[in-house]
Length: 185
Figure 1: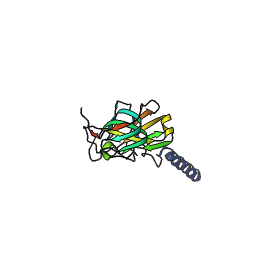
Figure 2 (figure 1 turned 120 degrees about the vertical axis):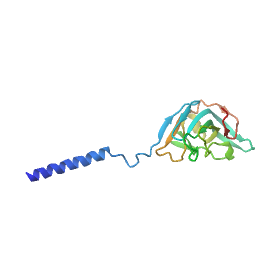
Figure 3 (figure 1 turned 120 degrees about the horizontal axis):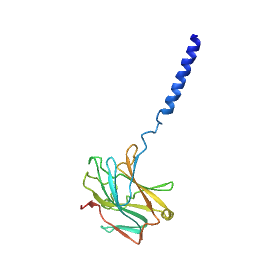
C-alpha cells in the first residue's frame, strides 16, 4: 500500500510541475510594449508621452530655416508632443516607421532644432515639430505604421501607433521644416 501511495504522490507532483510550466510566463514576458492606437488629428496618450499627429507629407527635398537641405524621398510627420507624468524622463526617443518587415528610424540629419526626435518634453506644455524619415522608392507604395515612444527600448512601456497610408499622402517638391517650438493653444 505504501508503494502505491508513493507512486500516486509522485504522479501528482509531476502533474503539478507540468501545470506550473503551462501557466508560467515566458522568459520575454513583460518586454512587449503597451500599444496605444491613435488616429491622425487625435491625441494619443501613454504612460509618459502624449502626441497628436497633425500632418503627414512626402517630399523630394527637405529644408531647414538655417539653409540646410537634403534631397531624397522624405516622409515628414508634423506633430505636437508632450510628457504626461514627469519632465526628467519626458523625451521623444523612439520614432520608427514600420513598412512590411522593414523598420525605418526617424532621421537625425539636419539641425537638431528641426526635429522632435530626442526633444525634452514637458507635462502639460505641448511642443510642435516634425519627424523626418528618408525612405527608398519602393517603401512609398504601401502603408506603414508610425510608432512613437519615450524610450528607444519600449519593453513594458507605452508605444503610440498610427497607421499611415503612404500612397495617399500628398507629395510635394520641397518641404520647409520649421524648427520645433512650444505649441500655442
